[in-house]
Image 1 (tube, helix red, strand yellow):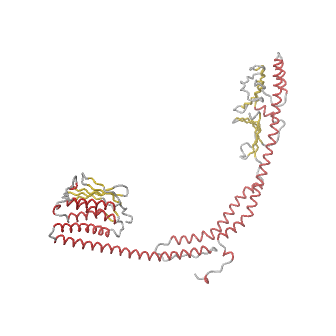
Image 2 (tube, one colour):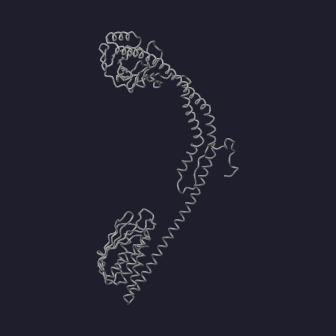
Image 3 (cartoon, one colour):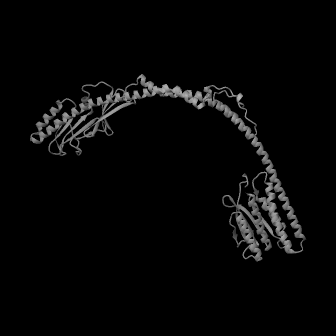
Amino acid sequence: MSDAAEPKLSRWGRLSTGLKMLIILSIGLLPLGIVAIAASIDNARASRAKSQVEAQALLAIHSQRFITTLSRNSFTIRAARDAIIGTPNSAGICARTFARLASLPGAHGRYALFGAGPDPVCTSPGFAPPHPPPARHQLGRAVLAPTGNMLEIFMYDSTGATEGVVEYRREALARAIADPPVAGDFAVELVQGTNVMPLRSAAAEGAVPDEVAVTTPFANNEYAMRVRTSAPPMTLSELFAIFTPVLMWLWASLVGWIIVQRLLLGPLKRIQNVISAYQPGDRGLDLPTLRTPAHEIAALAQSFDQVTQTVARHEAELEAAVVRQTRLVREVHHRVKNNLQVVASLLNLHSRGSRNEEVAAAYASIQRRVDALAVVHRNHYAELEENRGVALKPLISELAANLRATAPASAALMQIRLDIAPYYVTQDAAVSVAFLITEIVEFGMLCGAGQVSVVLEAGEPGFALLAVEVDSLTGAVECDDALKDRFERIITGLARQLRTTLERDPERGRYAVQVAIVDGDDTAA
């Protein structure tokens, strides 16, 4: 496209799409972000601080009432205990003490007064005090019932001896801390571990999930008082602060979607549809008309069109080159196969026309190897179109027929038994396999073989096991030493070419190698 054909772009149009999105989103979200942050921080802090202060004030009032009630009773019991220890007549002291405890304002309970011994001296009517637990400190111990309806106070002197036991019912403690009444919707509880004694219940108990809870401990953390109050109702500004981030997200999503859909996604989707419909061999892309201010998208579409044209041109060139190469390879294999067949025919003629048996045998030996190489090329030529490698089953079958046909007179009755599985190998491996079988079978023929067995079966993973067994090669082979030495060197070298180890079994006259195979559907190396 020439410079004169390019449309005139404004300053805004010349900006990149990413910069346009950044500017629009920043302007749209700046006021909302400032308001949301300021309102959320201010309201959250103020609301939480106010609720915390109110709960602390309520806790201070009720804990003071609770401590005052228990302190009066404890002081009276301790004074009575001292009097009981110093006076022989404890009955009068007990009566006066119970009368005074009943006249004191606050919580009234049931009492047990102790003297110097471990047993109570006097108790409230119908009260059987529990056995006091061991003292841990001078302030006493407290036990809150699991049901939450009773609090037991055990008082000890400085030596750990029991001074008194007091049992307070929940109703008595609730009346003591509620006089005079305190307005508000809150709950007051005594807490000891998992045991809870409710002294006042909130009207909206369980209705408002958000609450403020404060506690104060008593008697060296023996138990504690807890005040729970619900958070104050939300104001309009708090609601606005809560929903502002949501509105910001919605606004950002809407603006972002409009920008991205208008500038990027819509045009890219149309380009994607055109590219998806592109097939190898097409000469170009049928690009749609793009109405978008993002000129990068239009440039991208033009780039795709240029790339497809380049790819189409290169594909055509490669296809032509592959056709030429295939024809050349086929022609080479065809000519090599024909030349080898000509050489084999000439060797056969010379072998038959020779009057010297040794010369004829030498010609026949050379002919067998040329035949073996020709068989490999012929089978490779047959599989060239599928490009699957060389099939060993037809190769070994044809090779066995040629060896049987060229056997000397001494091995005219020799039989070759085949058990070949359908495996494929590379051309180099096929040449080594053909030569290896030829060498072993020829050596067996020259040594008077009557039965030859060639087996190709599954071996190790990725390999096939080729085994050639000759009856004349069992035990001590009676052949020319020079021939045996040459035979051993040749088959050892061929095994090395196959990158494997030749396995020998003299008792059976068996030679075996592992041959690397290729998948029939894969390209042969």
